[in-house]
Length: 104
Image (cartoon, rainbow, N blue to C red; front, side, top):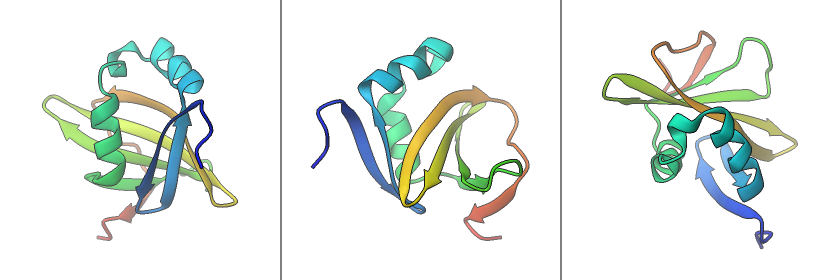
């Protein structure tokens, strides 16, 4: 059962990823360009163009989806089977790192 502060919990290629309403406010305060992209973010977590594992932190996964001029990046972390959103932003560049989905 989801706690009342949970905004969403989505099944992804790496397992469940969630975020809370209060944490989403922090993300959108820092990156206001994603404030109106919540539905898109949920869809991207389910069906990304690609997922990369961070070169810096083995627990961090970056989900990407091309949207017109930019790509939407959703940064997640998974520890002990608990996955959660760290941040989300629009970017012109895909970060380096091991591509884990789809396999090349």
